[in-house]
Length: 101
Image 1 (cartoon, helix red, strand yellow):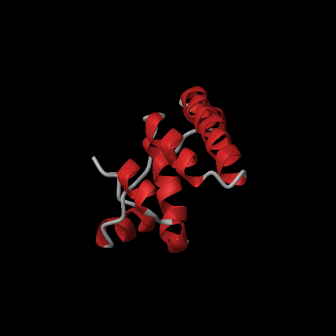
Image 2 (cartoon, rainbow, N blue to C red):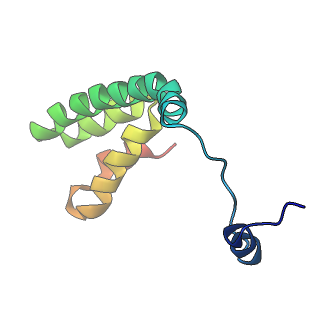
């Protein structure tokens, strides 16, 4: 008769999930499967943020916001909005009109 180990009993009593043990090579393989798509997404985001940063660095906030809206990249737009929320002095009627539907 197979009796559960003390660890199994402890996990069951504390409602902790039991994870199957996998080898290091299986773990690396699992992690690298989605690496290509994540890398492509992050590369695209970096490129888009670099474009917005160029306008922002020149002091052209209105164009930076317009470009971020036109990119249709929600992550970039969220980053821009986060900065705008932190620096409320950057808000003006032009910026508001670009962001409102």
